[in-house]
Length: 429
Ligand SMILES: Cc1ncc(COP(=O)(O)O)c(C=O)c1O
Image (cartoon, protein in one colour):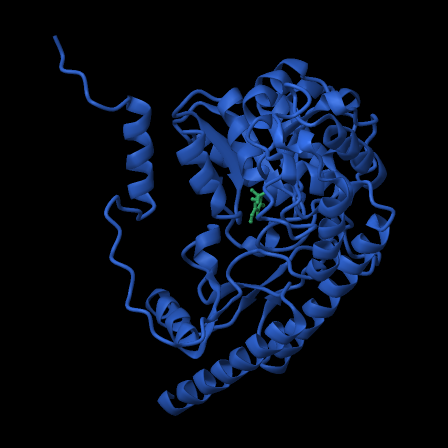
């Protein structure tokens, strides 16, 4: 008889996956504490724009609303009823859905990464593939592989700046779908996108729906940056449009295979509260299968705060204030990039800008550039993490949604590093 391993196959696959991301069971001992200021972190997509206002709103919510029942399990097997209702009303107000969102269309989760992993676990068998157009958030790699045990099938582009061109996008999806040996079950798209901070047009969304229908794929639209659209609308700028606005039936498509995910993490800068959801308007089986496990993972304190925020009379003002402050911070960071004559992808939404800080870079220069910045007190993330392709060098993603004093400090460091790099490059030539 074959000897049984002490751990499940799933556990072994998870650990192999974690090691693939460079994580080891025996971590290095923590470095000796030194009394130095920690670097300013522009590498994480966190939003500090309206935190003081939110802290005050949540303090009131807890002082006035916390009751003995909040120490119990939620009031339904499907998650907190008030939060489900508040989310439905919120989507109907701000996402312009073609069909009104009902609480029964929503599964609560502890964050949109859990929404994505939960959806993919329901849609795919372990080892199957999920199409994702590049560039995309590097967390997909981790959550898809580790939490859902599915493989991203990357649809690459020759030039990532064409990522929002419909024909280019569909051609790259078609090629990736045809080339992969994996059985592919879903397409995941992100609008507004991470790391480019731009939105898909209605035409692109429709073509993605048709692409999926022709191949029997589910379409998952990650809209975590929906309300972080900060640009002034102009004719040439594509506004944010939710997948929920479209009518799949009129496109000959099956609405039961279209799903949207959203969370409090980005638009309201509450990534630590862990509240997200899946909205699927024509697949009650899938919602039921998701709801039972995920809703029990959401804390009652979180649902108390989320409901207070989403039903607050101050909500419209908070959303406008968030957009205004994001626009101001974006202006500040792009001023520095422009002063240094650096290329960047103009963003209309999101919390970051994608810029070519190191135009001369070859593969071997990218990490030393990050290290130089870190030594000066700034952490940013490398463009390669977002699957932009090895031929595109010198790109980085910088988060700007920081408190203004932190952002100013960060920009001063960035400006100094860029200048000193330029003068040492000039000396070399
Ligand atoms: C596109 C995208 N989706 C999902 C997430 C995860 O967010 P959450 O905190 O809701 O899990 C992120 C986080 O950066 C993201 O950029």
